[in-house]
Length: 459
Image 1 (cartoon, helix red, strand yellow):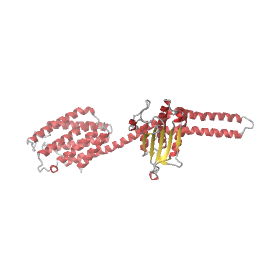
Image 2 (spheres, rainbow, N blue to C red; image 1 turned 90 degrees about the vertical axis):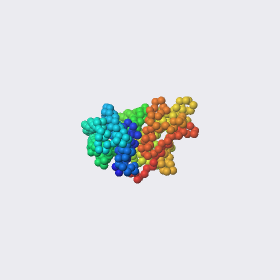
Image 3 (cartoon, rainbow, N blue to C red; image 1 turned 90 degrees about the horizontal axis):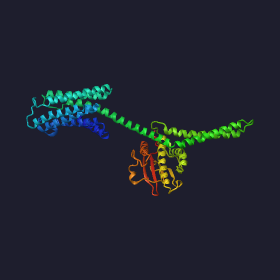
Image 4 (cartoon, helix red, strand yellow; image 1 turned 30 degrees about the vertical axis):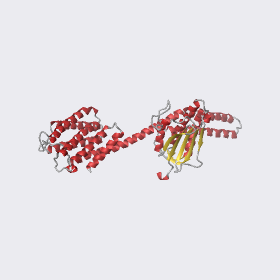
């Protein structure tokens, strides 16, 4: 059971190291755990079918694995305590361990190993100095972790010091006959494994939280970029109703100066002011919803309503660019569970990209912009999923770029950062959906965003 626990811990730490190569302490702890598991097995002669405990083959394996264990532990201490300047003492400790172990292996090979103690044993001067260096690294690292209030790492290094103490005492007990794995040493090392596994869980959770926060920051930056791109049209869309409100207010003031003011005209003016005020308020509400920084908020949404809000927000932009934006909604409600602001950001980003592609065609002068529309349509799949389709009659997507289209920092625009479609994919995946792109036969490109339908069981 102990060996299985060591192997599982080793696999977990090595997997973390593979995913995050900069975290080298996981590499060394994984190697350490594998070495101690193998050393524990090799110290059991029955595992090899060897009748005598002192057989040379078992001694060879036992010493080799003990060397690997102590060497990996030394490097783990350095990386875990964050002490790159201590690599020279660590290298010295490993060299001394190799010298001590080499003498023991030669003695075993020549059949001169002294079980009763003697100069051939591992705990002679090089081994003692190596263990002293390791204890020094442990004490220095534990003190640094204690001062930094990193209690888990302090406990792990302290428990590792206990294991090394037991190893030294075991060597003295057997008469300097080398490192032998005892049940007490295995149990002591299991404490280190438990502490490291607990911290590993925290590291993985913290990494996921950090990744999620990073995605949220990128999504927020993308929303700010979208608002920045729409600044001119948004300002015009707000100034227009505000100007109408001022004009109507002036007209109403003039009418009120009459001895017998026309109340019907004044009521019409007030209705116009109310309509223009609501129009400006809607624009501001949309912008605030896009730029607000917050966590993912899932709610029951109608796909038709989302598309209508996006079309309304982009209507001034389509007029400015003189690009027609067609919308095809469903005759009935299509409910899904999602974050309204993120889904609107997703569709706005894809539609703006489609407009850019249409403008690229218009820039050639071959096709009028009015003949190259962008269309946003909503449909449902046979499985009840809600699908948004953004179709344009632009330049299309080169075949060699289709497979990399949603990669981060991959862009075909000279002024692009390559994050828009990557963020779009992360938004879709956060909603449990999928996004794909393809070229139309008649020209242009089509983006499909498929999202799962609303399910009351998720509430």
